[in-house]
Image (tube, rainbow, N blue to C red):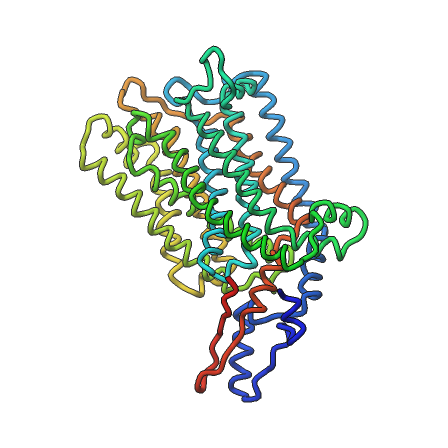
Length: 485
């Protein structure tokens, strides 16, 4: 499609208005909007390929540090397998601790990436074009990190055998009442769908990398590109497949975190047995996931010199989305607490001890991080387009959402409906090290991925630039868009 248009007039050589005022407006538009600031494809391809090959001291230090955290994760996990769950802080009341909180947190981080890409694609939102692959990668590795925790949580990892739906002659397993079975099913479904969705969109860029590299990279991209040549038929099939997967992946995303919410809501446990947990968990997952995507984009923009692709307009749009999610999350959280407080059931009154008890500092810090800081800053466009400010706000959201998971899992379990069963839970060193190591694993995989795979979907950027233009209306200049769908 692009080649046939380029024969008439290359989209990166659009004429400059003769009128000085219009020329000034066009210059301003090009500074603001990536799709109006087209450069030759060879130049944009060179930016991406050079960033992939750039491995300076900072890259090796980051890879070394996160790799050390991965080694810490594996070593501590091995010690736990050898010694058993007795080395953790889990006990009779708090039988679900940080491992389950981590499972929910990393699934939440993984939720937003593919959703952003798929939903914005179906809504024809063009600002998604340069950010979609970085977001999808967050989903891929977020779910991979989450998938470790059912294994870690069961202690004896060979018991994972009971979690999969295998033929059952003795009718002992699978146990369909076990939340672990449904967690495994949900995570597997979403990670397979997200991987297929990402790989389909990667094909044109893998072919570009194949045609511009030599050595092992050329052989790798040649194998991964599956013989992509960019024919009209291939483009049409890619467009159709991307749209079909977009329609499929969105309801899967909603179902996955609803299942995770039902792991809690189906239990007769004060604080968990709530009909609002399904949408509440989805809102929280999107909230933390979008914040994670913004943090990743800021780091990529700085470390890989992708300022041409990742501009203020993208962070401004994502900042507005994050502010909206903060409001939605706050609404659901208020609903959960006001019903508990007004119902005044004796069993649920134990939860209200969180307002004044030992966990109250974490509770109020969570509210500050999830509501006060985002809403206090994101209303301003200046803040939304400031990289340091956005990074701090998104980091606060991550801290707040992690605290929320901790309060829901070990927090609620430590203050159940039986006062004689209350305990003061404190995580032990293995739980802390495994948690830190998992953050390291997510970062380590992402760092390596950015040096192997084009992190910006170039073909989507080129497509958007080819169909975006300006038109003079009276004394003003306005952006126009040709719908190619």
